Image (cartoon, each protein chain N blue to C red):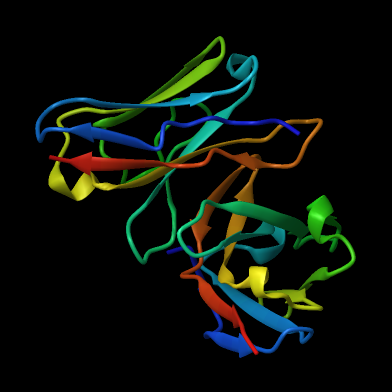
Length: 117
Length: 107
């Protein structure tokens, strides 16, 4: 079955960087894109960006431009999301999701990133 | 950017029908997708392209979209349907957008 498995929880200090991984299985990795979506505690869903697993093209949310980088490793069917210059309001659960046409399915289990001094 | 508006909460008794709305300017011209998120879990796609269901999603879940409102309808509501529900669209002039979410309470 199609599955996305993410790396474990992280605790970071303000100003640091975090890199979250998302390993795909059960489908041809390069046939779909991967999107990243985050959810702050008690809040809704926020789209962060998208990467094509076919050619590496990216599209980032404007508010994160310059701080986020999304990459893929097709040899291991793994996507990565790096967020730099972390602030307290970056504390959230970060999800990867397979991007099909215009929707997301399935989603990874989520990775909690806590930014605290 | 495009804005989607959902009611914060909807309550329904077991066995009844729940309707969760998603408002947006001329949303009827866009494809709307719906996600269910239970506490502590990742979102799950329950309806895509306005009214299609992924495999494994019960027929009790259905969707419609017209004018300025899209609606997720859950028939014969069960206790296990209690969750947050999010609508989402992709707008060609914008990035993917999510509604603020609706908490469904089964009384």
